[in-house]
Length: 201
Image (tube, rainbow, N blue to C red):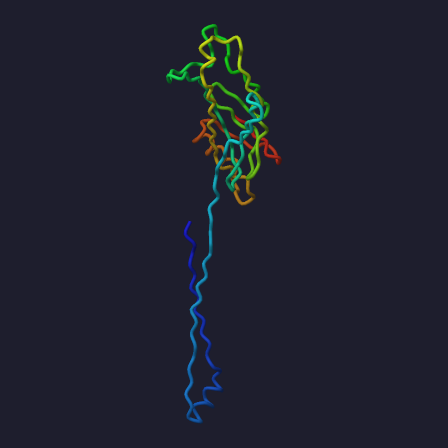
């Protein structure tokens, strides 16, 4: 956001008695004028989230989400997965027998999962904070169809945030939060206590 520019004009004038004395003895006088420019920087709050991943052995995959903005946020995430053969053919994560090929150890304890394909975080995520890991391990199912042995597994996460009005300056923060989450997520997020617990409706 552009800063506001304030111009302050300051005049310094010699006292009247000194002016009269100077005029009486035939000397000249003057005043000085200064221009002072002050820039008032104003910045809007930002929202942002990133996926934080950590790998150790190939089957260890820790995934969590971090608020990289300057505002507290409501957070929701979804994921997609597939396998890809060397020739580019895409395979589902379930083989011909309906067996899951990439077996994942999920931890959705702090999330509200619905049938819309999204998981809604049950806390306000403050700037710089991370969620607990939602995934800690991915294991290959050795009993899966043979064609998966040559395929590469892909797991993608999508995260979306809505700024949370949690400051003391917002008189109607509950209504603001409800309207924002309803408009952008299609569900109402309500902060229900001081530690930032969120109830999703």
